[in-house]
Amino acid sequence: MWVRWRVGGRAPPGAHAHNPAMHPALFHFDRPESVATWSAIDDRVMGGVSRSTLRFDPAGHAVFAGTVSADNNGGFASVRSAVVWQAGGGFDRAGFDASGYGAIELEVRGDGRRYKLALRTDRGFDGVNYQAAFEPPAGLWTRVRLALADFRPTWRGRPVPDAPSLHGARIEQLGLMIADRQFGGFELAVRGMWMLRDSAEAGG
Picture: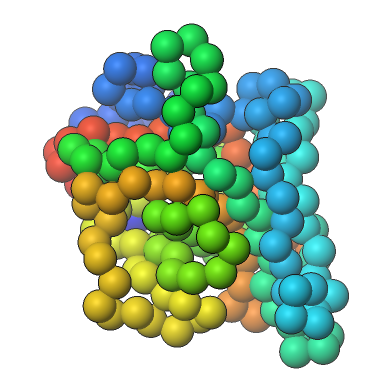
């Protein structure tokens, strides 16, 4: 289950301003260099022709955009970055220990399409990743909460039911994806991604 509410609108119980001590930012896309670690991993790695990028918008956010094509048995586009989060005034810690955290919150502006947030607990290119879907409304800045318990482990699109839980894991990579036969152009604006510490916040 995911929870959403419009930025500037009435928030659900437990809503908050982002306190760095309680809600550390995994990514805050407020500067051009904030997108420097992100790279595209599209269906081109399997012979497809879909394309995507994560670029900085001068308005102060990132944009995940591109085109999804069915050509050559393709059908997905994604971007990914290693998690190197800010601590002690500098980006100096690789990975994020999720112990004691219950959810991830995104501030996004959608286009009516369904997206996925993907987490990995290693630095490898291939392997198990944990995915949770969300579908923010088109044209509105929205906060989306994704409980860690709702991320489903997969490998190349197949479920991995015996994968370890994300609770207590170390999140090493994070990505955005669009798939599910949503062909054509897409654009998702993202202001940031934050960890939420306790179960009350994770549940909304």
